[in-house]
Amino acid sequence: MTEIGESQNAYTTVALFRAGNRTLKQDFFERPVGADIFCEFLEVAIHCILYTRDLYPAGVFEKKKKFNVPVKICVHPDVLSYVTNTVDSIRLLLKENAVFKVTIVVVTPDHKPAERFVFEVANPTQNIGNDKYLYRLEESLRGFLLKLSITESLLKPLPEDCTWTVQVYTRESAALAIEQKQHLKDFPWILADERETTLEDAKMIPLKAVNSDYLQMQLYAEESSIK
Image (cartoon, rainbow, N blue to C red; front, side, top):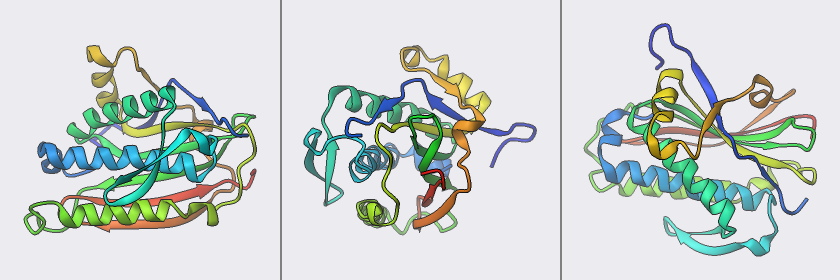
């Protein structure tokens, strides 16, 4: 999916949060409703991961309903702002058809990735037109959220004082073009270091996949043996 002569790189946001308690088809993104649904899902999924992995005390989460699924949303202002700004930045890359995967990375106190949740996206292989009102897509996204809600039973406990960040795999040219937009200058993305993207002796745990009229996505977790 990359352009000839141009590789895909991982970009990470400058902000790195400390735990308090210890590509899609371009036609899809030309439809504002479809793009908004995916970004809304990603935003909720990030909050779901923060809650299920105990990255913040349970008291800073509020119960809400998204996609007809009860979820926990972190209401701390700094976390809310970071997640929202991250998703807004990713939305711009999606509109350029320049997102290959998004990862939520949990980092140990000695700066080693302990685990990550990987959202791989690609062009859909089915014909568009059978899901005009996105009902099937929303149903699939509900399934992703339900799967994320039980990941604590699939992964080992995290050490205390972990941090987390978001990484986006995109073309370098696309990342540079986005950085030049005025409203993103206060929320920069930087090229991720190799040690930030590599897990030692990682074990992959498949979670869910979907191939709908609008979206082909695979979600899996990777867990490092250093935990």
